[in-house]
Image 1: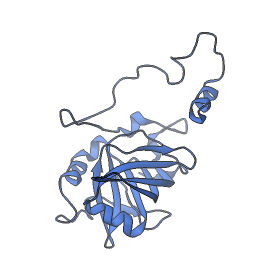
Image 2 (image 1 turned 180 degrees about the vertical axis):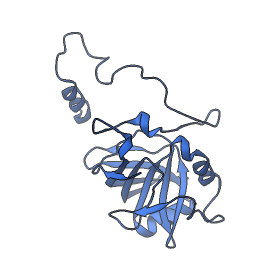
Image 3 (image 1 turned 30 degrees about the horizontal axis):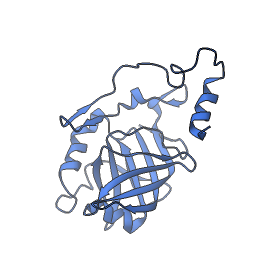
Image 4 (image 1 turned 45 degrees about the vertical axis):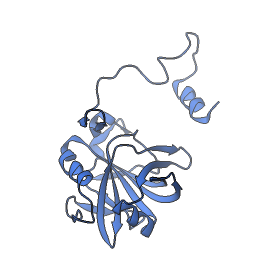
Length: 201
């Protein structure tokens, strides 16, 4: 599927993702279920990583990484990447890999949504390092758009439930965001409400 550049955006909420980094010149991927948005401008993502992770070595080495959304069609490969370390298993051939603007962050062709990132901060939290990355470019499969906007349902993102160790899919739509909680006489456009919330007004 052809990838469409969508500009520097965080795009998706915390879901199962594959963090990609070149280690000693070879693509390596590890699975995380706790990657999230860090900032809107410039767009940034954050995730914690154990200090002994093989992938961390590659992120520090190149200063770049990718966040590749995991969908149902690659869940088995993603789980494999979470079970086995790149120190003992060569994971460079598991996916079709391509490179974007930064040239050193491996991107997964099979992922429907990808964030190409530059590492901008490492925060020592004890057992883990919190990595903050600026999103330099985002890539979407063209069939994951509806009316020109990213469609999460089409991306088929997976959620990892730690309490029962299961991967789950999105459920039903419950209510419209930034609308269902409005006061009865608030007639501002919905985008204005969204902007107000994001700007902290």
